[in-house]
Image (tube, rainbow over all chains, first blue to last red; front, side):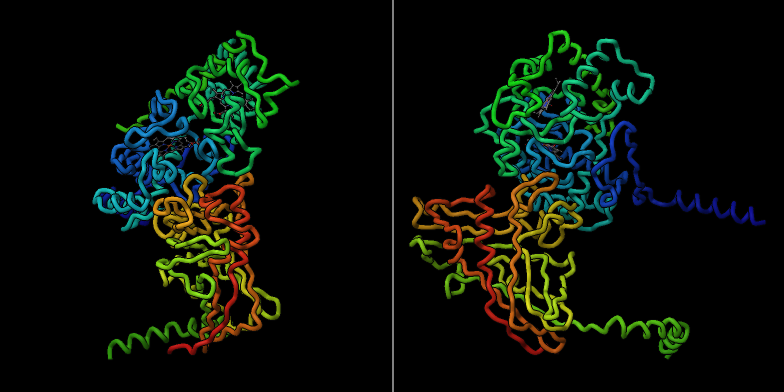
Length: 343
Length: 268
């Protein structure tokens, strides 16, 4: 008897669910966090991920509406096949082909970052979009005006209603929607990851040698499996900081002159050109920089100035081994993942 | 009739709850609140500041102002017995825009009592400056209320912004002066810190349910140019970040001064 009641109850429930408009139902999403990564920095309690939220964020990421001219989207400068960097451009170009001052940074694993951009000026993932949007050299728009455009669109009004339950789109929902998408851009399935997580991948003898060399010569800055310690340092790429003072532009501290974010090296095979000004075009050039090209200045990182000699001692074969290792950080799944693609 | 009966039923059914509430009530509402208005009056010397007037600063330079905005936050009142009332954090952020007269008056609901001093921050505290957009509503909303008062490139608010034109500058139609001061001190490493608190002491401020108390605070813009670190527009017409802004913050902090307390009967 009781069983019957339960049964017919659940049948009714299923029918009710089927009749329910699934578009109104916004399913929560739990991110799978890689076991070889530390705890994320981003606080998901303030922005719980949902299917509709992520989808909306992706749409915004690829929408030129976020720029004054209507054609420059986030995805214009951050292209998936090159690990969300602006492939083929030393420094990014934005609306009306205006040239920016810095090379675009690849976007991945953002939820583990405390600060953003080459100079670390932005302290919260949610506030990252304002920087390119309101930069006259990039998207040259105002958030206020973007919100106006979005509120005029029936489509976006409905999408925000579904994702956040709001009738009017305000800064909070807009910024959180973009973070919902960018938070999901996790790259953690390279051959290297599968090797360290014992998921059946092997590294060759040369790659393993490269890994050992990397650990001893590079990982004090490109640390952990995120391949950055999140700090700002001068790696001697230049000693002339008149054009770009780096971290000093944010801190007004002369001891920060010429210091830039230690970038992650994930997918580094595809993120060329390299360095904040995009001056190096290949990994060979990068390794040659570290062995022979490090320029001395007052803020040069002490790790790169041992016994008064600038640079890191590396033989040609060691460089080759490190490069083969760096290529094991290529995450093909990430670069082709349909969930992240524009089309 | 029917409605009345329903209400009656409702009351009887909930009589126990009602009684319990009634017992709690006096305890909860024992401390009465009164209204306190902080009125910010921008002046140039003795005159009220007007954007369509020309002035001369202590260095003999001609000035006309086009913009004057500042954040006031983290308001605290100290009672004569030394105890402190802090305006609740989520409702303690205000932006005084000279061009919008309604923003010159900050209305607060404050426990009744006698107070001896008022403290506020000119700007936005570091905690709030590192929180997500859900904590940045109203005047802190970077896409609405805080428009023009936020630096995208270092995720910080501009605490104090003064702009204008000066005939003492060459080509004064284009060459204005711009003083944008901000910097909350940094997130995971130290950055520029322009957080400045100002404390004003009264002989006595009485907040009661019966009367509205208004504290008048004057900001005399003429002093901006002749404080500890003198500013000449002809020497420094643009400050947007940079080490000197710390000194400017010291300058403007002391300019906020108490010009009086007035009381008016509450309109019932």
